[in-house]
Length: 182
Image (cartoon, rainbow, N blue to C red):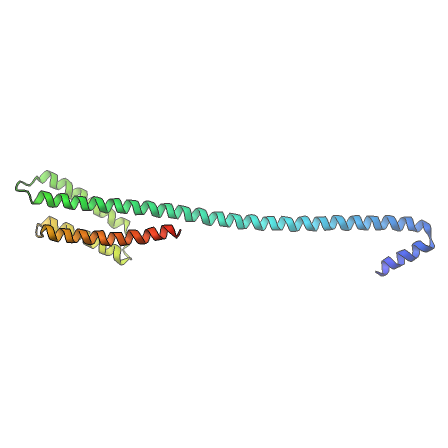
């Protein structure tokens, strides 16, 4: 403020210095305007940069959630199909074993396919989750029941019903995770 006051007093005493003071003030105002524009531009740049980072972060999370959800959905479909196939093979073996003339070649094909299907289910499930373990155990017990020929059709149906109940619980829980994008 004192600098401005001294410039005003000097211009009142000397008109030539008034022109110089006006030029100085014009240059100072122009400098301040450029400085203010520069600060405003930098602030806008930082704001845009921060907004881009936030957008990229949100997009990255969304992509990961979408990929995870799609992978989980594929897993659900594969597990469901494999369980249905295993049940079909169990019933097929059971049907062959009750016939008076057993077709051993067909039975061997069904056993081999069942063992493959059951192995795939075991690999698709998580041994740390109790219901997954129960499912695998029921599949093993059902095969033992059919393979040994010791059980009745009623016992096999109970085992298969239990497989279906456990599988539905697993598939429902996983579907809920898909819907929640976990």
